[in-house]
Length: 66
Image (tube, rainbow, N blue to C red):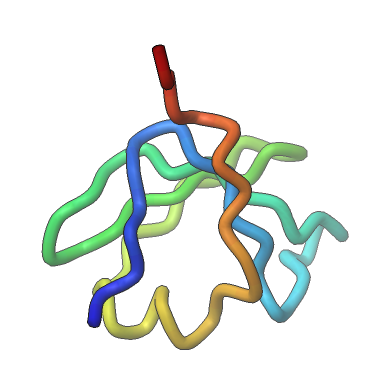
């Protein structure tokens, strides 16, 4: 079952980015996931399957539950 990911969620990845941060914001969802580094602002586009393998956990900071 695919991981439930929404725009604005913050994902903690297994490996750190070269800038030293491991927290990324989800900017785009679909077959591909675009994530943005919260420290340096670099954006990366990767297939959903690759993203789900590399993510450690998803922090639901981006959801707007009312």
